[in-house]
Length: 196
Image (tube, one colour):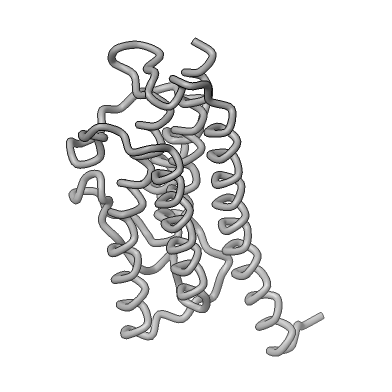
């Protein structure tokens, strides 16, 4: 039995939409989880480090904000390039090998600790939780806006440089999958730090 063009197009668009909707749901879950974490903190929980070399819950969330701020211009540029080049999506999307590998390394439980570059280390005194969380929410909204802008593009055919190491390149779909995985990673570390 052959599937006609309208039905095939509908199935393809549903696959793409489902993948992007799943990413949006992951971002929403990370946002809810971050808010639950902050609400559970005691008076000193925002700044208390579980060990001198480990970040506090507040520093973990500031780090996530720094990562989103670095990813957003790269993703917006990649989406614009995809539109200019007419790279229409045919879904379902697939991560490339590097994106898959980084995703495996990033997802909790954390098996391998990797030092981050200086630009992603929270440097200044921590702002109050409500200010950091306001930024976190706004950045999550901006990432979700990029997801909406990216609909209909071949996200696995457009490359982007890693904001953590410009020598690394992976496809946009991999990058979009890495953002919520990275958030789960650091929220998991923050939650475990509160138990220490």
